[in-house]
Image (tube, rainbow, N blue to C red; front, top):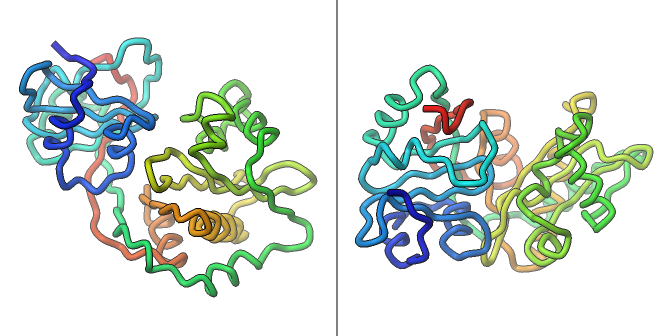
Length: 264
């Protein structure tokens, strides 16, 4: 029987050594949830936050198939700790599970060049302006949950149920053109001492260097607050951008993009 875990000490042991801030967010109780295959002395655990589901410990089929109650989303990115979990995911979801490679970066607070980031951040053209995400922009982005034309930027704020929680734990920078957001970098999620960065640019404004400007500005804002701006790359383009901003590449890892979650 799958339960929502309240014993973080045990869960921390199962996830020990996994350098992933979304897991830290769950373990710290900042956001997200931890589930285990049983209440007493669990051997398996799932950290669930947003679109991500991290599986650790002993591979457990019931946990792989489990979708939290009141969760309506049909898409999830499952990240297995080892090959046993990979085999279990493929067994449970078969053709619904698309195997992908993502790219992890070292967590090194002192690696960034302030001078280089300031130079990159200053490359904004006169037709654009830049703003931190305030309450007005937060609400504008939240409408992406219900308005298709704004769906591209909803992940800047989706994990924060209201502006008060975003103001306390989140942080974001948006580039505007004609008063409307066209690119931005924000906190996909938060943990104690930092954020996980999410960068998105409107389709018609891509390949103009806006993502790099947003990324540089957000990193600088994080450093002012003594927060660590964690980066995880979905693809080689994101990996290259991260390295341009100063991150040091660590390793590739396997994940599964699953449509039809909960229907295994």
